[in-house]
Image (cartoon, rainbow, N blue to C red; front, side):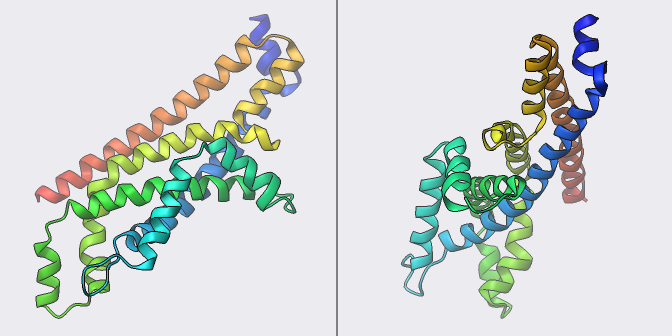
Length: 225
């Protein structure tokens, strides 16, 4: 009880955890939006071909981007973004959003590509037969189905991204994990602050897991109607 009081009650330290959680969720939200946008664009670039069926220049750009991002640790990407690429910026949240968004985009690109490849090619041929352009067919016919098929994996990527943001303390951002470390250093009792942060992460992730599960079930029900 004394450790709990020191970790959460004394000096209203519970407020620090909620502020840290707010920072974490802000980074996750905007990183997800950026990652979905970049991932979709990168996926289409990766799958682009000429009329002869050969890969375009955009394909090689996308493949290079995916290989570099997936082949390097997230923490190094964050440090490079903070200390080298955006060293003039004083907005740590912006730097974190860009770094995690770029990182997530590489994985989202492959997830969406798998979703597109799961769609029957006959639907593209049907779009051609109806006189639709490839862009129109992809936008209104293929991509909605691809996102629906890839939704479970995209939800898993969101949860992974939520946990990965725990490294933003390297760029001095007071997220949930860093707040727990700061309270630990003040109280000299690391058990309760760290366990408390772990419980908060677990509860937040469990809530999103339930929400995503309900969304998937609703989409499956709509598909069978």
